[in-house]
Length: 451
Image (cartoon, rainbow, N blue to C red; front, side, top):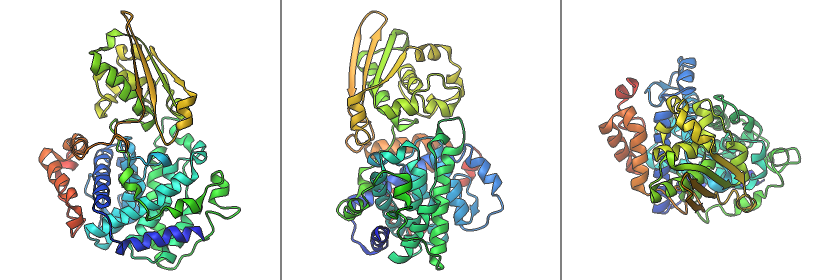
């Protein structure tokens, strides 16, 4: 059974000699997870979920409140927080955000079981390597209706949690097999102003924890859930090549090829934002100079982010016209660019009306392995400027440096932990492989709780 190949790989990573570059990449992923989770934990639905499940008890931490609860609840709430502000990592080729489901699940169980930092990182790597490859196998067909992070994320969370628990390949296989029948997440959920999208990652993280813990006690699953005639592949994909996905295990590490977001919006908007910023900065343009902005990009960006009249912060994060207009207006598209005040700003609204977004066949043909955009700006005095963004800032072929990742971390966590608290946590996370206790990471929960 193909699922056993994935599971055996995950189980074996506990004793595998890992390249230093892979461990470093895992630290980067964890640092980025904390960036999104600490800030996202201050927002609904995480705040609401924390109150809804306030009766939980256990050693796993909720971020940023510092409340302790059982690992299932921690995985659920942190999983939602990690995906709320649209700043979590991406595995580009798989149309997938692994951190929110995988790290949320692994950290919750690792804290409950007293894992070391090294063992925790290995479990994270296992969850990433298995689920990233599965995501590539099912897409792009799966992405027509399903939210890959909610579906494939369940497999990654189950695999990672299984490694934490010390399960063998057969037992992790049963956890992953049951993930195949419980995985869910429909795209309709994030095409409306609702809180359902982060609930996908919450469900994936929690379900992975539950299934790994159940498998530890002997609960079995259908081991042919991926390739069976009524299985996951047949029902939710289009002839996925599971063998090819598994054959690549151990030959390279996908966690070294992650995209870390540079803008606080849907990743489909990023190449256009990058291009508008490049023209703006090179030619010193301001919003009053703009007569027309034309964005050519891939079809999925138009389909998912074509909203020309966003009314809420969530809708703005999925609006290409808003994203490029705010980038032109403010010179950035970070957290402060997506707010209720900006949504009511009339000059910004006027600029949005000047943005045209169209699908280009050549750019659509390159999707999902390349996310590109062509930008053409006409000014009020008749000048024309063009820019081609072949990729996004933050993609593996144009990555955020460690310093840029740290800058993003500080920007997101300083308001939560204070400058000194954020710096102390970041320093500890860079040394995570030497940590003996994941519960005592230096997070000033009193400072966070006051926010």
